[in-house]
Amino acid sequence: MSHPHTQLSVFLRRGEWMLSDAAFEIGGQRYTATQCRDTATVLDELAAALRQHAAALPSGELPTGELPPDSTPADSTPSDDANESDA
Image (cartoon, rainbow, N blue to C red; front, side):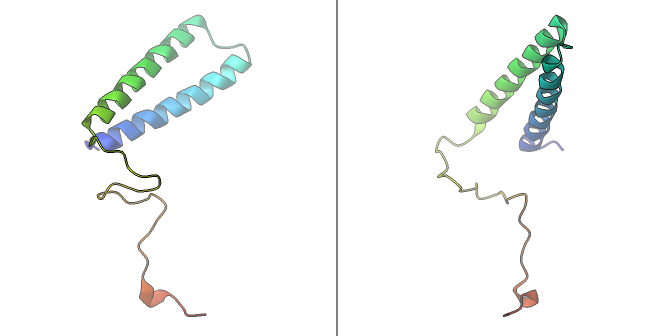
């Protein structure tokens, strides 16, 4: 799991879960000032990681819906034309 894209992806998911928990707890007035500051610190670190990642990417933007040449959509699987029926 040393690939930078994977590490950032994991960091983003952890941030997502943390924000979900924070939203729930803040809504119930159970989030302390310390927790707010800690969450803000993590968000600052996440923002810095995203900026660093962006700086390492090629300068050109991808057209909408286009993936980089070395990536595959997560929900796609290779199709086997031999197993498809002509129904």
